[in-house]
Length: 204
Picture: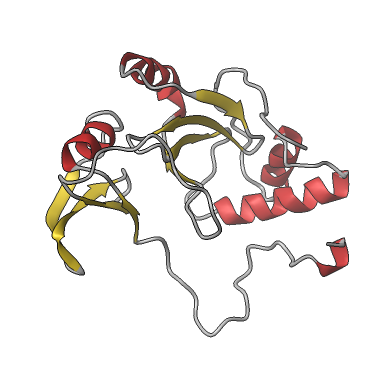
C-alpha cells in the first residue's frame, strides 16, 4: 500500500460516532484453574480479585486478575481442560498479551522466569524493551518496560510524534533517536531507563 493510502497516525481522536475511554478487561480461554493460578498469580504476581461462574456457560469458572493498574485480565477455566503446548494462529486469534513491568525489576523477572523453567527472549523494540515468554497454554506473553520515562496520559502523543520523526528520517521502525526527539519536541524530559543491551529482533 502506498504512503498516500495509509491511514494517518495521530494521537487526535478520530471522527467516530463514539470513543472508548480505556481498556476495561481482556478475556482469554484458559485451561484449568490450578495451572492458570500458577502462572498468572504465582509467577507474574497478579492478585486473583474475583472468581465466579462464566455467566454464559456456568460449567466454566471465570477468574479475574488485577494486572497491576486496576485493569483486569479474565480467564475462563475448567478442570476438564489440560494446559496446552501452543496456540492455533488464524485471523482473529490473539497473537500475544503484553503487561507492563518496572524497568528496575528486569533482572529479577528474568531470574524468576528461569527459576520457573520458563524460556524467554529479550528484545530492544526501539520504543520499549520486552521480555517474551509463554503462559501455561502456549499463549505468548510480553513483559514490557518503557525505555524512557513518559508522563501518564502522554504516551499516545509521544508515540505519534516519534512516528512522524521516524517517517521524516526514512527509518523502518521507531528507534531511540525518534523517541528522544519526540520527548524534546513535546517539552518533556529525556530520562532513559537502564535496561540490558538486546537485539532488536526485527524482520525488516
